[in-house]
Length: 198
Image (tube, rainbow, N blue to C red; front, side):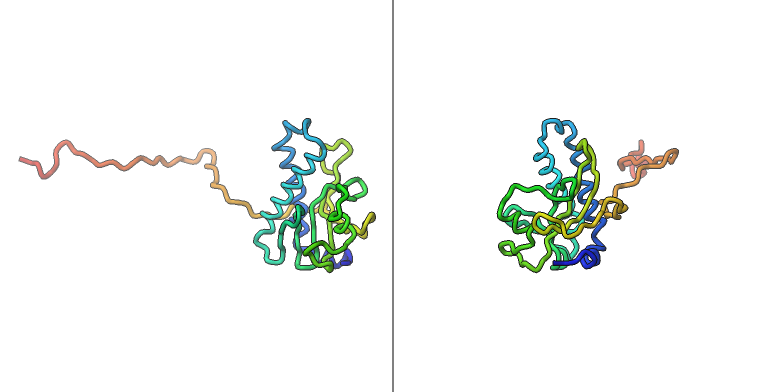
């Protein structure tokens, strides 16, 4: 199992982007689903936020050759440098993920081999803890589970936002700037053509 210091070295260039995947996914849920938040169960909310975390990961890491994002039997997994295997999760106040007890989730948290996935990759969970009112984020972490306990965790909460490249937008005209008027080109017709002189 990879130590915390080794994991921090491997994840170093990516930590801010992992944080952004989580924070932006929660913000997207708040902005896009606020009207329906009262009818969503906690499970539905966690599922929607999870899907957005995965979507942001595909956007932020898609061009990186050392990171591979793939789906395996319903799990969305992120392979970092063939050393670490991450999945996104909602965490409780003790930074533990809560799962429907399946063989797959047991194997992942116990650091055991998953079907088709080598056992030497350390399994990590990148996730968020909600505040007591369930209205905001209390913390953002990467954790290393080992069965029912945590080996270690990395606190991403206070990291500054990464410089994520976005699609450029055309600049808005400055106040007071003269606007150039564009008129369609039309043929000029004089009252008399030069060739028609008597």
